[in-house]
Image: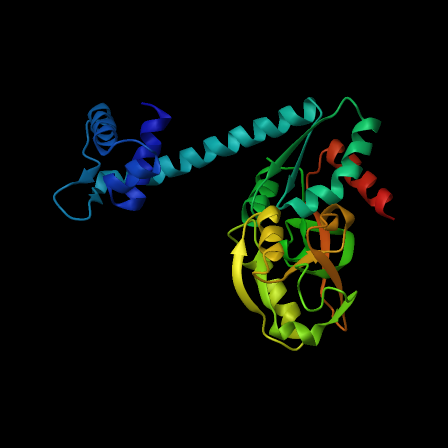
Length: 296
């Protein structure tokens, strides 16, 4: 009996469909049916009632499903704990981030920390916010950098520490009517078509921007959402709309478009580092201490 068969079984039980389970695991329906038939032969029981649509677990199948689900969860936890222990012993620090903003801002800190600790192996993982939170919770990520909306202050399992705060700029094309101005009043933005950068499926970033716009007294006219900075700059250059950019040199050094300061606005961004509230290893504690000392 293999873990693969058990994972197939759980997927079919939860999706009530051989077809959907086969798609989930990128195999043919015939192949997954054969695997379940083999599993039933090994157990000498029928796990599914195939006479009904959608298929259902038999009574024996329900009992088996409950225990298998628990076993697979424990197996994953065992892997994560073993990996966490291995990382501690081998001086591996895994840093998570959610977008290009964070990786640009923390690059200098990470490089300097590496020079102080050449024995440490630093790895990076890019995930959306929900997956970053899961990674922090299960130990596959030691620290995570993201905008402040990512971490719920009421989440007692995750702590956060602010490392960078700055204003937002408005990026406009070279033929925009306001291009020769250095500033633009927030009230003038209500007439602009806005292109929004979202590198993740989460709506938290969009929600945060909309709240900032409403605080300025207008409802943003969002005409498009894009997933990369390059696309965002290109669309602004083509005068498809305007866009918000964090006021940091690493982002605003592209001269194909112009950047205007937004006046009379609370519009800002803040980058924080998130980390588990308990059971920090010494390497993570050392890195966090260095981060906090560096940004003071």
